[in-house]
Amino acid sequence: MHRELSAIVAIPIVLSAIIWAPEWVFLILLDLVILLAADELFRMAEYSGIPLQRKISLLSLITFLGAAYFKSLPAMAGLILAWALLFPVAQIFRASAPDGSLRAAAVPLYVMLSLGAAGSSLGWLKSLAPDNTTGTKLLLLFLFTIWIGDSGAYYLGKNFGRHKMAPVLSPKKTWEGLAGGIIASFLGAAAFHLLFPLPFGWAPVLIIAAILSISAPLGDLVESVLKRDTGVKDSSNLIPGHGGLLDRTDSLFFSAPVVLAYLWFSGLYSFPF
Image (cartoon, rainbow, N blue to C red; front, side, top):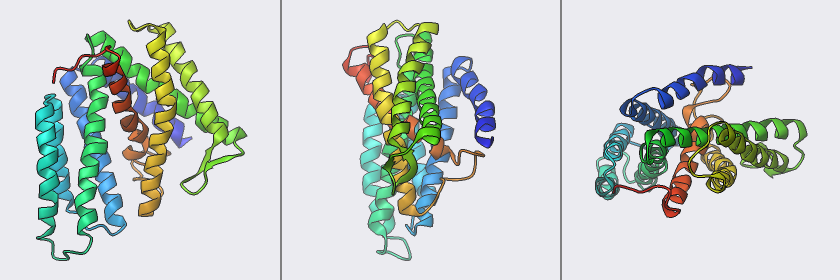
């Protein structure tokens, strides 16, 4: 019940931010979600004994998101290089150095890429579109397909799942659930395109559905690896029935760069970098 109630509250807020809010408001809200999800991952790392300097790590992510907000690829690349050098330097000044220095330097850089760059890609699905209407529709198609696929996997796996897909990493995931998620992803994308046609036609919509049907559950499994390694069940208890923001955004952030890359290589998007 908590799962459904949380969705009922969250979905109107998300839709309002995407459809009606000015672009800068949407992007700032997205950056806030990225920062909160990153903080959950940093706390998971600390819980497992990694001696992070969390304030410095969050500061590094803020600088990166600032560059991403202004769509400055050179600034983003420069910041990744700069922080890749600064993170190890910061370990020198820890009282417990050198213990854990490699992991403490690697985790914030991983977060900058896996949440900062990937999360920014989610915003670019909307802001880099040929026009605002197309960007809004495409982002909604992206979210709707993942949510429908996740729901299909959850309910089919719960009721008919027999064969474990990754029993150590995610004991509840089954191959039947994955199949249900794939079918639901295609049906969801098709239904969305029928109701709110995109100017791309059917082929790109179905290709996006195919990408999401695989990348979304894969992103969820990646987070499961991290949670098992750090010894936590959920990234936090922020959202009743769902866990933390990282638990709810892992598949979105993992999938966004893949879809964005497809749109770029197919010529459907042009990048002003």
